[in-house]
View 1 (tube, rainbow, N blue to C red):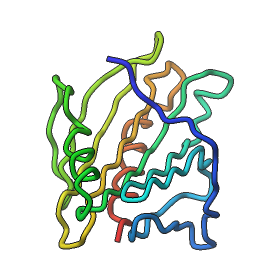
View 2 (view 1 turned 90 degrees about the horizontal axis):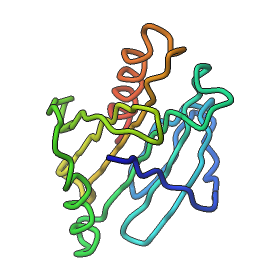
View 3 (view 1 turned 30 degrees about the vertical axis):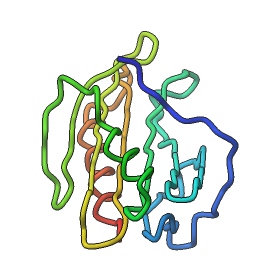
Length: 162
């Protein structure tokens, strides 16, 4: 299965001094070292894509990406789009992080294997649903703790979403 990564024209919201951005009525932590590669507000659906630096991927086409998408639960098309985000994913391991359901699965981009973690917050008492995908390559030069570090990064992002 190929990994779909969004590349659209960049509109930088400007990561605030406290490293947060505001999208779709939510406040989200974005590390100041990350590059915002896309911001795509589509009415009831807003997406922000970031690239997380990794020394092991320098000079390659592979990268660690984190995508956050906010869906307005009052919009029928947004609700339908949200429900289709994880359709077609077959071999995955389900995990829980607080109120987040997570699907951990593998894919590839070209010759590179990736670990993908899709995190879903469907109902937290607000009018929006949230989908967060982190995809990171299995590179021979990754630090031995890279998987653990990326999972902690993801946990920090999920815990920051208010």
